[in-house]
Image (cartoon, rainbow, N blue to C red; front, side):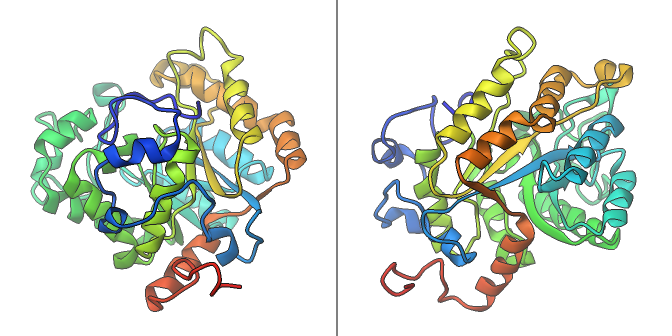
Length: 347
């Protein structure tokens, strides 16, 4: 099983059965899913990027960049070594400015890890980009962002959410960053229907693709959901794979590799994102970051040679979100495009 996250708004439990069994129970990601003939086949995304239909593509993206210097150093090291392809930065986080400077030095286009919560609170707190007077529903009584997505769901006004997300994008652009993709910290996009609708509207509004973080579903169940969003004009990867299991890793570090090994060995044709959370081992990181053991083990996996050797053996090629962002802009201009062509018309 590729995902290890508990209940979501789409399903009360993880499921490994055929996707056609599970999907009728899911609420819509978009209206097109009501009439879309669901199947578990690969989507046309690889073909849109100039690869054959049976190509296996991967993007390895480190998120939480800008939160802590020891996380940032690990992510930039993996990027510089060519062991990951992308980063996503947290604009409200304490070290965003330093991380943005590192990005500019490398002339690298990056993603944004849109952030509406602060799980660290008094230990390592931050607020929104906009002041409390402009987005009051996003602040807790202590003057920080809410500490959990449950609190965010209970208090957030959707207009405040929209203003803040656009402000984070604008602040990153003002910092000289070229933005290639948007994802969400603590997967907040799925906590309410209005959050879902807002998040999935951002590609047309901004020209930046979003990441469909469906990590609680196995890959086969993600493919038709991703296809539905592609038909709506959103350039999303075919699946999203994240091994976030901090309650297991300290007791069984072999899990750090086994999960990724399983994912790589069973990856179907298509374009798939691996979301990773690397960190360097320092006393400050161990003191401040509650899930540091998971982050250290993620760094060990992706810094080492084994996973990259396996990807090569399985014929998995890597790409980055800059190509998807260019495709998103092209699709925004042209409603009829490679993502909504029939297979016969695209050959």
